[in-house]
Structure formats: C-alpha cells, structure tokens
Image 1: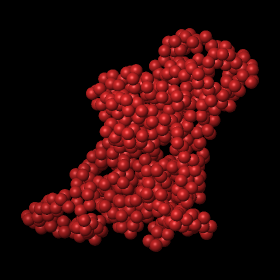
Image 2: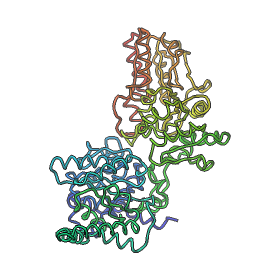
Image 3: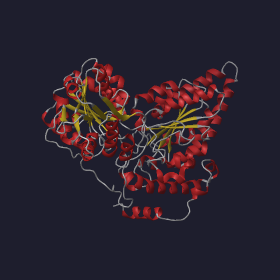
Amino acid sequence: MYSDALYKMKEKITVTEKPVISGLNLPQDLKKLSLKQCNSLCSEIRTMLISTVSKTGGHLASNLGVVELTMAIHRNFDSPNDKIVWDVGHQTYTHKILTGRADRFSTLRQEDGLSGFPKPEESEHDSFISGHSSTSVSVAIGMAEAMRMQGKKNYAVAVIGDGAMTGGMFYESMNNGGREKNNNLIVILNDNNMSISKSVGALSRYLTSLRNTENYLNTKRAVEKTLLNIPVVGAPVARGIKNAKDSFKSKILEQSTLFEDMGFVYLGPVNGHNIAELDEVLRTAKSYHRPVLIHVKTVKGKGYIPAEKNPGEYHGISKFDVVSGNPEVSVDECYSTVFGKELTELADKDKRICAITAAMKYGTGLQFFSAKHPQRFYDVGIAEQHAVTFAGGLASMGQIPVFAVYSTFLQRAYDQLIHDVAIGKLHIVLGIDRAGIVGEDGETHQGLLDVPMLASIPNTTIYSPSCYEELKMCMNKAIYTDKCIAAVRYPRGTDDSVFDKSNLNTEYTLNNNNQGDTLIISYGRIYNEVYKAQSILNGDGISCDLLKLTKIYPLSDEIIDKIIGYKHIVFIEESMGSGSISEKIGNILAESAYSGLYSTVTADDFVKQATVKSSLTKLGMTCETIAEFVRRRSMINGKA
C-alpha cells in the first residue's frame, strides 16, 4: 500500500546530483537560507537519513521527526557557544549533519565512525554525552547557571521528548530549573506521541499563536511598564490584569499550568515541521532571559510512510530495504523472545506472576505476555527506579513480579534494588536483557556493569545462562526457588552455542575430560567461545579443562574446592573487571594461599561502538584470542 510513495522515495535517494548541503558552511550558513531553501534542505536530509540508516541500522523514526526542529534550533542559536543538550541523544542525526559531519554520515554507528549519540570528543557541537533518558534538563540547568556565573550571555537549550517525561528526573530538574529566574535556559519539549492535554479548538490555537509573537511580547511589556509607572493605582491594576489573565489562561490553556507553576514561561504548542513558526517561537523564547519551555508538536517518522505508520518498529531498526520498508533480516527467535514466551507460559499456570517493563515491551520480548495477560502486564514508561520499587510493592503482597530491563538501564535503579527490595528481602525477578557487549550503540549501552552492581548487593542471586535451554531453567529457578532478588542475565541476539548440552543445570558444569593442569572458567555466551578455544588448544597440544558457571553469584565453596588444584586458571568474563566474579574468585584464591597462576580477561574501560564480533576480539573474548591468551600464559607457566 506504500508502493507509489516508496518508489518516489527510492528515486530521490538514487539521484546523483550534487547535494545542496555540500556547498554550505554549517551550521553558520543556515541563518542565511530562505524558508524555501530550508525546506529543500530538509528534504535532502530526510533522504540522507533514510538511505544511511537503511544500510547501517539505527534510530530512524525519531530522527525523521526532528529535521525541521533541528534546523530551526541551529538557525536561531549559535552552537557551540550556545549549548544544545539532546535528551537520550538518539535523535541527533540531523544535528550531526548540520554541524559539519555530513561527509562522514555514511559511517554512522560504524567502528571508528560517527556515534549514534552525542559525543563531545567527536565534535564541539555535541555539548554533553547522552544515551539514557530524562537527563537533558538537569544538564542544561547546570550549563545555564555556569554561563550566568561566568558572565556569559549564551543560551542552554535542552531538547527532550514527551516519552522522557515519564522519568522522574525530568520533574526534579524542572522543579529546580524554574526557580533560577535569571539564566538563559530554554527547554524544548518534542511531543510526538503522548497527548499532554486535550485540544480546546480555534480559540486556544489563536491565543497560542498570539502569545508566541514578538509583537505580543513587546506590547505586553510596554503595558506592564506603563501601568507600573502610574502612581498609587498602577501596580494594583497591573497585578489585577495579570491575575485575571492567569485565571482565564488556566481555564483555556490547561496544558500550560504545570510548567508555569514550576516557574517556566510556557510557549506552544507549535507545529514542529513549520520552520517559520519555529523561528518565531525560538526568537520569542530567547527574548525572555529566564526559564522557558517550548511545546513543539512533531510527527515521528515524518516523510517516510512506513515509519509514520509504525514509528515503534522504526525507533531502532536494523538494515532495511527502502522500497518495502522491511528489515533485511527478521529474527523470529532470540534470547528476548525466548524469555518473553517462557514467562508467558509460566504465567498461564501461575496468576501470581506479573511482568513489568520500562517502555521496552518489544525490546524485552514482553509483547507475548502483554497480549495474553494484560491485567498483569505493566509498562511504567521510562522509569526504572519506579519499576523496581513498584515490583517491591507487588512482592510485599505475595505477587511474583518480573522486571525485564536492559542491563544498561538497570544501572538507574541501583538504590531502589538495595533500599526497597534487598533490605526487606522481597522476592523480585530481574530479566536482564542486552547483558554484555551490544555493539554499535557504544559506551552508553554496553551491558558490562550489571554483574559488579548486583554482586555488591546482599540477598541477590545472579544467573547467566549460555543457551536457550539454560535460560528457561534459570527462569524457573529464579521464580520458584530463589528468595529476594533473583537476576537472569542474557545477551542481545540469538543462541549460537555449539557446546555439549547433555549435562545442563542451573549451578555449574565442569568439563574435566582432559585432566590437564589448565582450567578455563567462563559463563554466558562467552562460554561458547571458550568451548571452541579448547579444540584449538588441543590441536596445539595444550590440554585444558572447562568450568561453565550458570549461577555466577553467590559462589559456592564447592566450586573453589574443584578449581584450587589447577596450576593455571584463566577466567574469561564479559563484564567490567572491577567487582566482577573473576575478581571475587581471585580474592578467594588469594585468601586460600593458591600458589598457581591465576589470570583474568575482562573489560577495563568503556567499550566504544563496533560490531559485537569486533568488540569481543579486541577484548580477547573470541575463541582465537582466548586460545592465544592461554597459549601465552601456558608458556609463562612452563607448559610450552
């Protein structure tokens, strides 16, 4: 049904004429363009977005929705002197194109290429790193206050989506920001999905349009100044007019009261795809020199019909065919879907089981649960802190809450896990998706800190299955046997395991057929690489045994008893090293006066964007690099 529009889009994408953008000095030249030229450039940028993301994957719908808004921001502000802070940051593709990175845009999300998120080390126009939600207003307030104290007249602009309003940090920052009356803080609310309030018709639109003009603002200020200069009666009259206006406005423009009660000037809503309107409202906002919130309405996926029709599917997408809109590879089964289906089946038989997500229903595989058990499914929005404490409340009443969450986003709920669950020994289950390396999203999204974080919390059990079958087994154990916090962590993608599955369990498996002096320990998907490395080492005449941990924390004394006899132990762990399981075992071995050689392979810094394969290779966690590491350590240990 999209055929005509899609073929036209394909024709636009394959045009070989020299693009307009290549002749511009960006972002400075944007201020010189006519509105017609701006609109043409917006079309060109949309073509570039669709063409590039179809090859690299990435966040498409959100970026298509902010093309005009991004252009208007750069037309009316002076980056990098004015600071533009993007919330989450996955909608900054147009920003990157308009700040001198158009010629490198084809490298988006590629190793050594452009990041899919703001990155100050990449460009001076990326004022702050961003990969998680609801942080931009806090950052912008800090920047605005710093510039005020430094005597600078520049602006701090936070661009935040309506979805991020579900995060409590947004309200915390707005409550604080509205009290700072003398800074140049502007918050742009990009409303592309959630209806903040009901439309009140033509009168509301007229009043909104009137309030957003500089003429209105200048007239208002002139009247107020004149009244205040009239002796005796002037000030009371001015206050009376303001009180009457505010009362009337609160009845007609209900959407403005929340932000104005917080101390912000409210402007909007305005059409986020009309550059003339955006230019006007941004100029008006700048003239206040106090905290302002601009409410902008946009269409997610604007300009590409499949993305407009299904913005959720095109929020984060793999490579896809431009004409059909279909992804090149459709994964019917992965760890996320296996988790979601198994949880649904368990809930079929047990009404105590509830499922919770923080705005990631499809990403965590909970679409199956929500369809089958809608009364026990909760999408709390981008609010991981609330999700954990909410789960604690459910658990306190005898329910079995399962919170499915990406590893990187669970970091936001550390205090709630401790204070609201672990201390009270409440039983909740965490399904930790995207554990380990995730690839092209880079530093802000790698799942390398959940193990050190959770292993530091008393009353916590952590499982890391190495295949689908173990995932199901661990889920059952976490739900029905364990107490307090029970976490099951699993990677992004499919089960590619080839190791022997004849002795799967939820504790550990020791493969000591070789009866060698070397033992390699691992867990999760990396065990598959360890298993393949064993074959490589055997071919080199190096005998080694394997220990696959499934319950990785707490560690049993039995495991230490089994490994302490080896002369050379190597622990390969897809986690940050500090606070890791390998570090904990190392400490136990040291206390036990272990005299052999103990080596670890872990991450020791934030991992930049690249494919999962490339990242694991650099970390030394592929079968080839593991074999080489053991080979070198064996030489040190006098075994080769």
